[in-house]
Image (cartoon, rainbow, N blue to C red; front, side, top):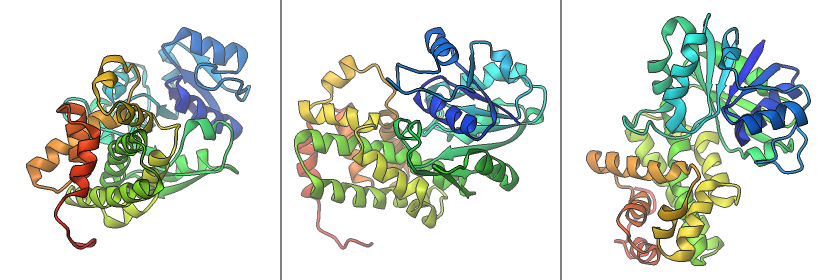
Length: 332
């Protein structure tokens, strides 16, 4: 079994190490020559993991032809790059390949889920299936081999089992799922809720506030996800509640970090002027806000995140407005 990881960032490196630990032939492809040289020559990726030594069996290259005879290709790039990457690798493909998606968000123009984008951009004769490998996980912990559980979600049960067995070991346990709609929506929405979590922490609120946000954020995730065709039980699992908890409570989360900066400044102005990182929740908040408004789905937390990010509303005012909404039963 030959595996290629597209993307030399933190998650690509972490997943490559999992495969190398499992004695899979794995190569990382990346555009950044310094990162590739660091992985290949020094068994490190200092940019993301200072002082962490990677499995020596991981190979790394800048040559995209490496995907030519791959059995499985893992796409570990931001959502904005998925379409371009699919077009980049397609001319190199010679056989049906399992494409593993690890991105959590939507297409930057069409708002489509990632599995749909991949199927539209890789011809059927080269695509065995799309498997989304998603769930509550931070690369910073996986690379240190800390105990983690995620989910291999696919419409193709056989390929989901293949991915499950390839990645599972003593520190990473992979479950299977087939609710592609619910799972991909869940891991996307949680990014927007995590921005809200960071904002509230930046303002200075504590554990009570975070518990309220996660609980009511889950309610919004379920409300939106089921309206779009996802199954209720999916949002109670790893790609729903699990991913929501880890992203809303961890300083490893870029979404939380971005929100924290916005909360401390009580404004998104500085974030927009200086941010250089990919923060999926920022665009996800806009996508969910726009679609929810069109379909009349009540999403008060996401709406307030949208207003802070795109309408210059002060976070403190958003927090007050959320707490001042009409009183209602919890379950409705």
